[in-house]
Image (tube, rainbow, N blue to C red):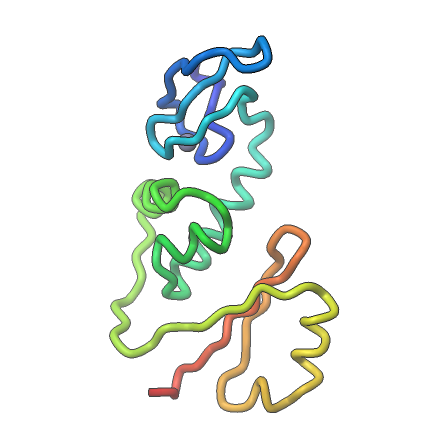
Length: 139
Ligand SMILES: [Zn+2]
């Protein structure tokens, strides 16, 4: 049982939930995700854990991270707890972000107006890129 994990949040806390197409289906008790195939490697999971914690540090809320990465906000909350990630309290500062493909990203950087007074952080996200605008001095 210890080798088997939820493909969505890596939790080992799941229960049997019916048979689908002759395969045992499970339901994750932590993120409510239904699955018939267990998580295989650690790679995909670690990738999302890293991205999620990165976004968390950038000031995104759990719900926003859920929207961006497609992993449950409960998973993100659990990872933040597990890795004891703490971020400074920010009252005024909140980054804005965009999900862009390679061509859109190239266009974005072509226009220097987009970078003036803020700059940006770009990180890979599946087959796209996430751009976080660093609007520190904006009220
Ligand atoms: Zn789960």
